Length: 184
Image (cartoon, rainbow, N blue to C red; front, top):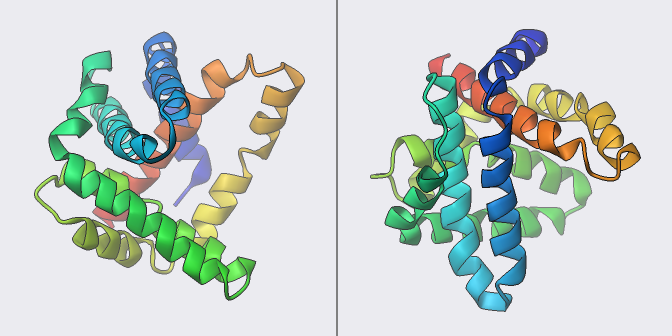
């Protein structure tokens, strides 16, 4: 898969939508960080699922809306279970050394996109499907993630101001990559 075409598509998709996408990402960040302890596990995963729905919609040329962010709460149980499974399994694989944890984290990285497209799936099915479609593409996803390092450095240089563009850009690129994986 061509990183350049994925990123070019993402740039086109976020054009004109940066403000609303950043607001959605900001809402998720704020709500996830101000909700204490266990309550964060109840709020964060459905919001993450809602974000996946927004970015998948963006790839289909749908206008992003803030209320879509809260659609993830309709699938609260599976989203929370999926979140817990990803955290626990990644942690357990990381106990073997850092590299197996990174590999497994990457193999689970598409699970929220899968659940967003297939809300009837169980968390376990979404996780297994993510492992299946990322199999053989772990290195590509890793390199794609590394390609955003200059953008992340720009965020530090601008004291976070560049996040307004960079976060939507990264998420849209990953949504496009998910669709490429799914279609292949």
